[in-house]
Length: 191
Image (cartoon, rainbow, N blue to C red):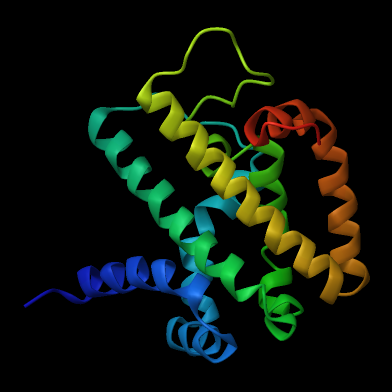
């Protein structure tokens, strides 16, 4: 028999896989089942890192590094669920989502969840002539994925969330200036 935290984690993995294909009712059911407080706890490290300016704290020991990688994975799962929820205008305008705007801006500004948490180096600003290793390609894909999910949430909040959310979008536009080369390289076309 699986313990409750393991069940919850497996449920999160399944939800992340199934939500993009789910309809509005499925998204509402997942968000209602998880609850905003649980989603906020999943994303708490992002909020803390964004408030601290995304600066890594201290030296990393192997056990501490594993814990931080688990934190990055958990935050990425929460962000994936949140980006699916933001497809619905009622959830995108929710005060619960709007309270996460600073963390989402931090993900975009730093170029990914791992970068905001100080666990990964920033993505290269432009493609280099040397090929990337498999690990570097995986890290770049994770950074691009989490950045795009945060952007999706911010755009939805900006459209549905009123003046406060629109001000957050102005912050995103400001940080996008220094990410243009990175997005152009990642998408293979100018942004």
